[in-house]
Each structure stands twice: as structure tokens, then as C-alpha cells.
Image 1 (cartoon, rainbow, N blue to C red):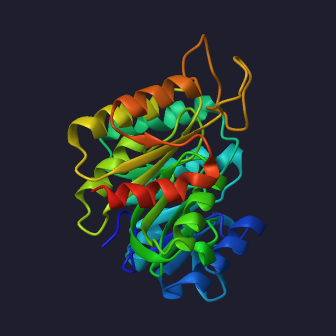
Image 2 (image 1 turned 180 degrees about the vertical axis):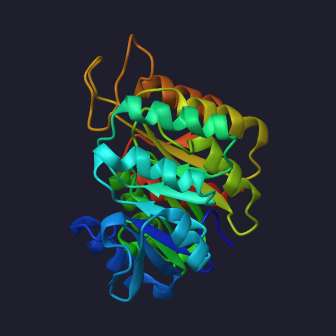
Length: 295
């Protein structure tokens, strides 16, 4: 098994005909199950196709015609929030938004609308690398060649550190059930705690790597939930130990404000909650391997 996506997932690509969308759609199809990318959406190109994938005018039309249950979004920032809402209103199970640079106010409106609708759609991102269930399904921009099928879950705010952790695990002979990049924006969809819950319920995930960074309190919330509920070992890494207060570091959500959200505070909470951490990103895989020995 896995979480969120598998070999049965059927994907719509919003923004498929743009340079970025076309490139990554082809890369995802080349990775596994190419026939599962069933539709693109572009109102100006409805009725045409790309590499044999039909293009529809709306997400609702694409879903009705293909039975799709997921969407990935490469739409530019100005239109990305509207693209998310279109997919949510079509009642897809999962929406993965890769787009970086969506205005915070736009995302606040998206989250508000999802609450109004009582939406059951799971939103991953924005500003995320997507996710991979090795050898079954890749949605987004993660490099597939570093992944191997296995029983370790990975969840991370940082795309690059997701890849680093996955590569280390693979080098140690530890495959992954699913690797999930949740994105680093301050207003986003799935949080660390949401993904930990899914991994905890997955019978084919044995342990989890959780990677966080400065800013916000998502890692602390996840750690406290894990302390009280998680039945599988979790190891952690927090990026941004040397980040100065008040300076945004890379991601829109990676900022220490009034002493809150520091790496030191997050590391302390994770350790207090029984999550073993390392301060060296090159040791993430080894730390996970050690946690399996001590189960």
C-alpha cells in the first residue's frame, strides 16, 4: 500500500500545455503508469491534445470524461488559486499545486472557500514538489530515479531535503512507501500532522522521516500528535538552525517572528516528544536506520 497516490490514481494536469507543465507531465508519464495521466485542462485549447492526452475546457468536463480523481497544477501564480478552486469544486480527491509565488491573500480565500464548501478534497501545496509512490505514481517535480519501493514514509516542507532524505534511504537499502513534499508557504493544504496520520494508518509504512524548517508551529503540532498517537518510529530534521530572526529564508513560511518558530525550539519539542533528531542533514538516513534497529 501507500498513501494519497498509487497505480490506480487518474490525474488531470492543469497548465499542461505550458512549458513547465508539458515538461513535467512527460517526466511523470515516463516514470510509471503513463496512461494514468488522462487529461489536461486549458479553456483556450479544449478539443486538442498533447502527446495523445485530451485537453478539456474545465476540470469538471475532464473528470466526467475520464474518471480522474486527482489534479496537478502548474498554472502561473496569478491564476493558480482559481485553478485550485476549480479542482476543489469538481470534488477531486487530491489536488497537488506545484506553483510557487501565489499571493498569501489568494490562498486565504482558497482555504476559506474550502471550509465554506465543507470540501473533502485534500490539497497538497502550493509551492511543493509533489509526491511519489515509488514504481507506481509520481505527481509533480520530484526526481524519480532516486526512489525505491519500500516501507519508509517521508514528509517534508523542503523539496530539496525531501530528495536528500529519499536518496540517503535508497542508498542504505531502505525503500519508500510514499514521499510527500507539503511545501513551504505559510498558507497551504496538508500539514505534517495530516501526513503523519496517513502514514500511521498505512499497514505498509514501518517508520517515517519528518523534515521541517523554521517558521510557524506545524512541526511542534505534529510532534505532539505523534507523541500521543503514533505507533511507528519518527525521526526528524529541522532546517534553519543558523537563520537570523526576522529574515525570510527561501520559503515564504520560513521566518522566525518574535522568537517563535526557531529551529532550536522545534528541535527541543521534537526531542521532548520522543522524535529523535539530527542537526546534520547528511545523517537523516542513518538516523532512520538506527530507529528501526531499536523498534
